[in-house]
Length: 319
Image (cartoon, rainbow, N blue to C red; front, side, top):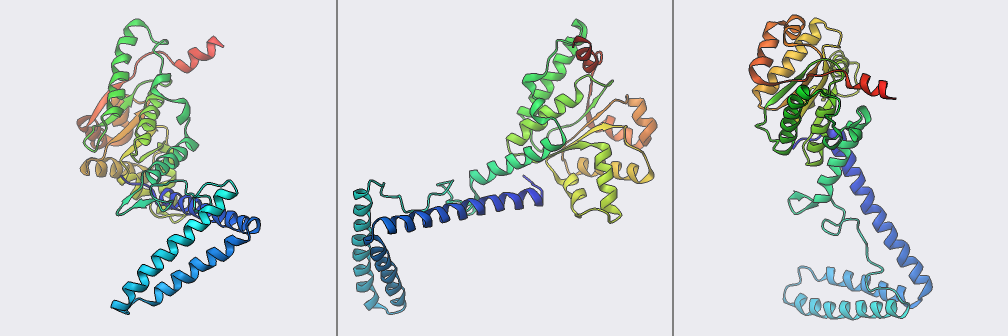
């Protein structure tokens, strides 16, 4: 599963900081215990000298075996003596050791050849936090979606859409369909697309979510050398799920039309799902984005038509 370079580097920095903090805390405890118990520094220095002597035996053949065994016995004796001192002062046996946040990877972020669960969980959290900066991700969950604002006939239709979206999030994989959410404003398109995003991010999928206008603005800055990075378009094309909100509200130019088709076509060809939400109907998409673009969407996307009356307006009237 892909993550942006910035998120990956931030996760590595956090893991490194955790390890450094744990090592500093251990050093602080050792220093404080040395002041409390004057016998401890001598024992610790003896362990260090013993380790250095052992290192010097490397390459000495048969002679090294005897020295190694003597060193092991001495090390166990010294370690036991330090443990006894700790017990005398009421400290646990591991008090002077490094206590990492993650005992599995010791705050290195990986175990053997795979990333540790703590690192992948951190990537998920950072991805969620990044998405939440631009969207009300915390407030848009499946559990918060209410059918109360639809008429009986509308409710049956919207229940079907809700169930489809919930199932989509539950079973999402690289073979999942791309979706088009279309209908009038205020009918729950953004809420359900955000609900899907939140569910997938929590499972470790890399989801990019933004308004179409914001996406096009960033692409334009990158294309004409005004941006700070050069991998935004790559992320749009390679993320596990791309969600483009409010298609049709952006200012259209030849550049934005070409970029939209490139995103649409490239993700379909590479079998990477996309969710598009728009207030336009199918004819409106054709009028604004050409028949070629409309044909790709109608032919390749699952079309979910949202119906009802503006929920935001209904809520405002209830206040």
